[in-house]
Length: 293
Image 1 (tube, rainbow, N blue to C red):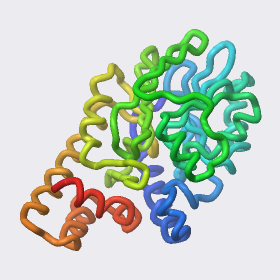
Image 2 (image 1 turned 90 degrees about the vertical axis):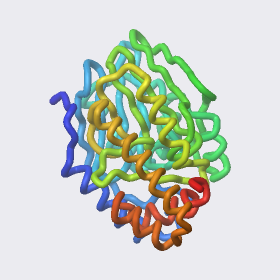
Image 3 (image 1 turned 30 degrees about the vertical axis):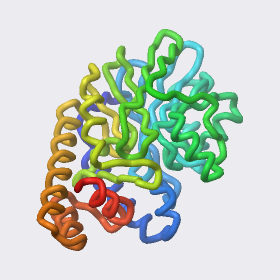
Image 4 (image 1 turned 90 degrees about the horizontal axis):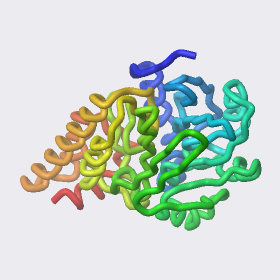
């Protein structure tokens, strides 16, 4: 198993392409859940640190595996249709049971496998806002446990700190910090696509205005390695760059608002300067213009 710190650039670009394809294919579903509409993925496993692994594909969200003596914690668990593939990859690592699943947010490419893991005896943990949103959409596998600001999970010999650091992608994003592994799992508050994608789900409480403050709080934690919601594992410097890009994006929207530039002009700027696709525009443009006056 290779230890991976560098960005998997080609896979990340393929993932970005798959998002655009999914948006065209899924129509209205994209407006209720940006994780919907993907097909079965080909999964790849990386060892990030001792007893800590990442399972990823070029399509849906990443998930991670922390193996302790008594069982496994999964951080995110993709779509329901990915259950068998994830369990097969997990069995290549360990035969220990899944005890906990942590959802970084509500979207189905991160939480869609909740019910199948609960059927195996696992408990699901998420932010209170994410659970509320899942219930509103009548999702299966609602979380068993929730947090508001912070929850510390003692898992065998390991510690996991779950934080709500503020709004960004949604208002229920959880950052998972593993202090012993010097790693954080960011969910969709961070993606290593090029161009960098800020998918702001305003209908789920997301906020571009507050996203930068949330990233600043994440960067205050001690870590070396970052697992994004989509794309390959990377380092602190990459997350700092993402924060800088977020602030620049905010500033440019504010400047264009002050200059009374049109919606079409702001959209063109975001497409040109920050690579916003039609998919991202449909979710975030009007909300970003409204809150960055």
